[in-house]
Length: 381
Image (cartoon, rainbow, N blue to C red; front, top):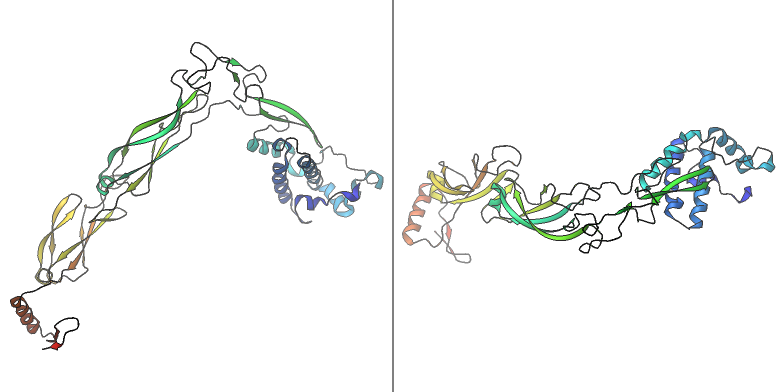
């Protein structure tokens, strides 16, 4: 009876002033949620699906919606004198018909729309990607290297070549689905007959029936193997980056292409260098005299030790640039730079003569002549 029906706006979770786009969006969501193909044998979902369709048929048609907004469910009650609800769906023009809606549902769940063509379930499918990781040194990351990684992957059976059939035999095309792997079913809905498709129960969706399965793979056509694969690590790779090795992943299905091997690279820290993009950061200790008078010192780089000129009056924390001594660019030629931060090394355990010379220097520089004997010692002139 009309008084037992829920409000159509409530059914779709909408307010009374909802737009056509909002009604269409709500219908799509609920139709996917309660579609009988996703809940076989569930009478509650079937009833909700029918309720959603009925609400959408009314609210999706401007003329029917106007009547419903004015008279409620009574507008479609034959006993109320308004003409009744025919359930034909002919007035559902606000959504451009049901073909587009159920076509979208079919793309997502794999069933055909109203007379739509279902996709072949046994068509070629690309193999899955396989993941691995490798750890390399700072220098190997900078200049590139070759490493071997061990991976477990699915491959075509070597005995049956992926067919799943024992050597010398072939599979039979499934007579139930004609080799497509799917069968169509017809379901009555409030809007007429709707076709949907699902996996063929006879062949399990493969489109083939194997009478004599391969003993190695037991008819699956695939085996799992552990492989050691050589991987070229490009110069300039950074910690945490992933490189792709095409065609070294899992084998495809039904003649589909092989997946890729994805290798994530970890880089061990260096005792002397740090990395900032394509730049190398390092530090060098110099003496007080070298900082004051200037000097030429050796500093380590990725290419070995090089000479670095320290100008007179260099201050602690000064940074010097060594062009082209950084990390090679990952894409394209050239290299970054190395930046060397200099620190002033404070000497310890000076001799008496050295201390006297230092006091003489301090006096010549008009520096305060007060010094401490130690952390807790007395001050002395």
